[in-house]
Amino acid sequence: MTTAARAFALSHLDALESEAVHIFREVAGEFERPVILFSGGKDSIVMLHLALRAFAPAQPPFELLHVDTGHNFPEVLSHRDRLVAAYGLRLHIASVQEYIDRGELRERPDGTRNPLQTVPLNAAIEQHRFDAVFGGGRRDEEKARAKERIFSLRDEFGGWDPRRQRPELWNLYNGRHSPGEHVRVFPLSNWTELDVWQYIARERIELPDIYYAHEREVFARDGMWLAPGEWGGPRKDEPVEKRLVRYRTVGDMSCTGAVDSEAATVEAVISEITASRRTERGATRADDKLSETAMEDRKREGYF
Image (cartoon, rainbow, N blue to C red; front, side):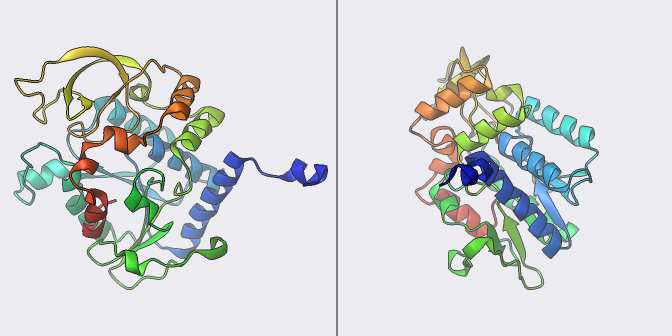
């Protein structure tokens, strides 16, 4: 590469950002009612940041949707609400608890509600007639997500069929879908956990404090540090102790584990991730350990 060419070459993060911005604009042009899944976690915060950048100085032409299990970390929900208010966005909340109260869903024996999100999610998509749903899934997280395209066609029940995946050559995306179907869109597909944190550092993106090392009451279960809560933990044989921990990913408290860490800054987190040999979900998500195909099975049923 010549000196002149290098001067105009995009950095790795610039290339990922450019791809994501292109995807957001492509969806805005192809679909009538897109929505962004927004939980207040780091990937959805980065996704919102990219959407804001894609349409600045105008507002993104998308609403937000959060499927609330009722067992989310309070500091994450508070951060979610602050961002929604700061940018003047509209947030729809689909509540798992409401479905349980109406008898349309039943609590699992293990208290985990992540698998219960599918029904409220698909109901909200149908109710609001969303035809494109942005998610923060990345291919490095889990093997089922590695098989999914950036534009992922879903049937009328929200289900995913790997055999219906479409080729995406030269960044050309096919959003065609039949009535009742919709498309899940993953702008961060080609990002890694390290890319996300490096982008957070570069853009000075604020995250909930839960992502940085802090002292917290936790107990050990299945090789993970879980937080006590109304979901049913801990059991009598699971003593609670205070440890210096942080969360690599956040979700339902009953299945999201913390990791021992002293990384209290973005730079320290990046150093920690660089040395890690386990993906964030592989290390801290019990719902992915239910079976060898847990994530793929849930996706076939309409999960994220």
